[in-house]
Length: 158
Image 1: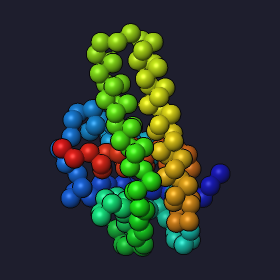
Image 2: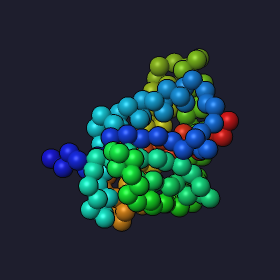
Image 3: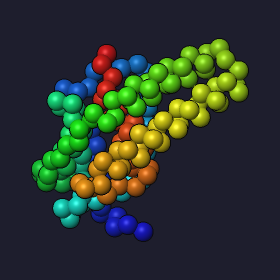
Image 4: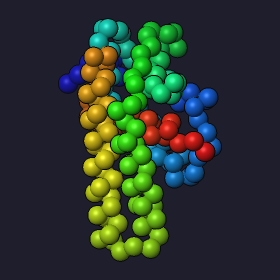
């Protein structure tokens, strides 16, 4: 098992990046944060001592990770270009919209088919995030999935 100190113990989204969101999106954000705090692996390549607090924000088409100690002392900041994620996030949003519409009026088999596509895109986004971060931080698949959810939440603009 990984070092239990190499984890995120607190996470927040930068207030300048956060906009008022639908109840569904708020629920997804809260669930992702809760699940992330409960079970994650986050080990910066710089060999910093954790556990860590993390502030995520989008700035100039980059996902910025502000990594803090548990006492909120700044340890490091790194960023990731979002160009590789643009079309994937757009497609993921379209499938999510179809999924939420289908819940209202479609058959269970139709809902399940859309959900399979939604989960597949989410897994693809998480894998891409993990791959793009590998030179900055080691994360496991569950952590990558939750972080991809939060990246999508940060992309919602009203």
